[in-house]
Length: 333
Ligand code: SD4
Image (cartoon, rainbow, N blue to C red):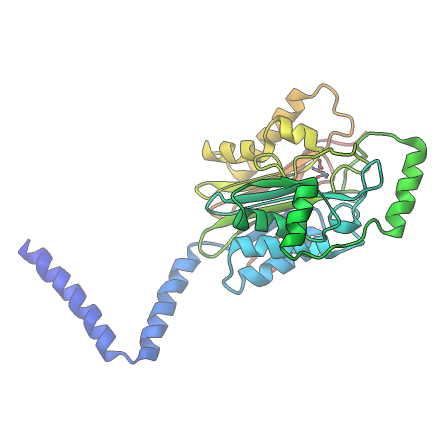
């Protein structure tokens, strides 16, 4: 006991001495050094779906590399894709529903399991930021349709006009045949950006945004804005997001399933593979049923897997960004 007291006193004494003999700049240096040691325990990483993720990840990385938060990084990252009006699957340039309306779905989730979502939102350029506003400024998780739009306008979000001329032209072409089926989703023709980030503080967040299934029935909502389907984050374990046929992803609560599989001890890669297996087991007809999952855990390990060949993910860590092909079960016929 006596010894313990002496040791404690000794330690405190040293700390006190350190504070008194170091000039403020040295003390600040020490604080910075210990903060750096803490940060080095985590490896900031951002992963996102498809090759449009490369530009999006750069947007996110600017924030992560400036000691920013994962939540800010994923929002800024997917906003890059939403701003790109040449992108036919995300944001206001996306493909419309059967009536020619571009309606957008998005959700966001942070390290405290706070989440926000919008669905069937029309005429607003950044659904992900509206989703964040739902999370931060309302007691709700999800707003849809006109309610979501009115809320966005109240919050000062700008209106955007859609669809673009090219989008309208394609839609008119589609209307001639009116085929209500999911087109083949591969790396030339993909939808949705889902993004997951781990920051230097060891916190995870995710975002997901899309215009959804092209020429969908009016009112249709896919997995992308549904917490647990298109995106799920549990800061104790990891995060996951999905792309592909939303109906199939919702059926197995896809992203939540991937996170729970990681909780059971599986790596992000195996968790994605097991979730894809589950989708395959639940569907007799796999025609055009592409689904891809991406997962990221607290250590910055990530994985990705899809039903069909062609899914890829953009990955940024240690300042280096790259596009990686995901594993898959089947080749397209
Ligand atoms: C949806 N999951 O609306 C979205 C679309 C998508 O690759 O991700 N396609 O069902």
